[in-house]
Length: 115
Ligand SMILES: [Cu+2]
Image (cartoon, rainbow, N blue to C red; front, side, top):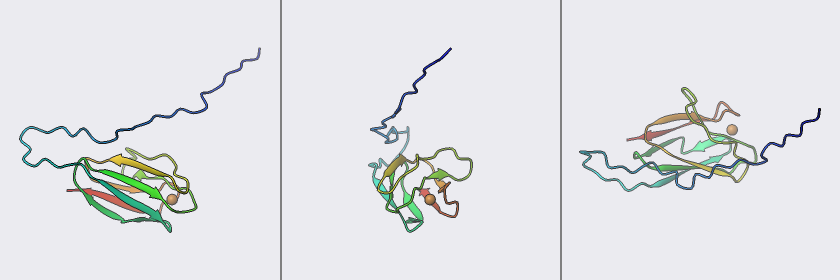
């Protein structure tokens, strides 16, 4: 018996709005307008290696290298990007600080510090 089973070629989840819910927590005294920051990946490094943001900000990772990279949360891999080819980018909204690295090149490390 021949079973033809074609997997969906592409399953794309488009997260058009990756911004964290800008919910105003009760009693919060400062309303921060979410910003977008960029981390450039170049010459096997994240630049800046340490990025300081505010909760709810979005970080865009841009791969300028000729090789693939990814961005993986370092402590328990609680999140990770897809593999970024040269010229590709990926973004995520941060509510807490995270250390991250590239799982393809484990010496590549960086962190996002929410303050
Ligand atoms: Cu890498």
